[in-house]
Amino acid sequence: MVLSYVNTHGKITRLEAIELCRISEDQASRLLRRLAVAKRLKLVGQRRGAHYVLL
Image 1 (cartoon, rainbow, N blue to C red):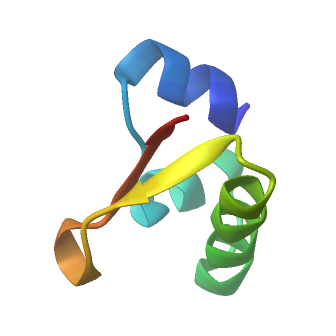
Image 2 (image 1 turned 135 degrees about the vertical axis):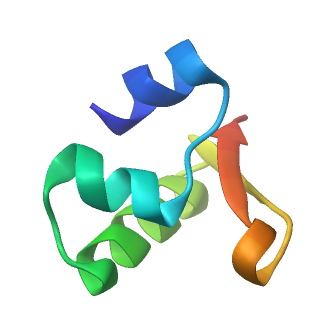
């Protein structure tokens, strides 16, 4: 679900992942971090401007 969203919109933020998957902030952070470690997504930016893009 997250990867198809990024494929369509070009990027995803933690807040968008929370709303899309209906999960908590911690769960969204872990999900996005796992996808980054698996080399599926790449973190761009820091803090409030952070978002993930496809690798």
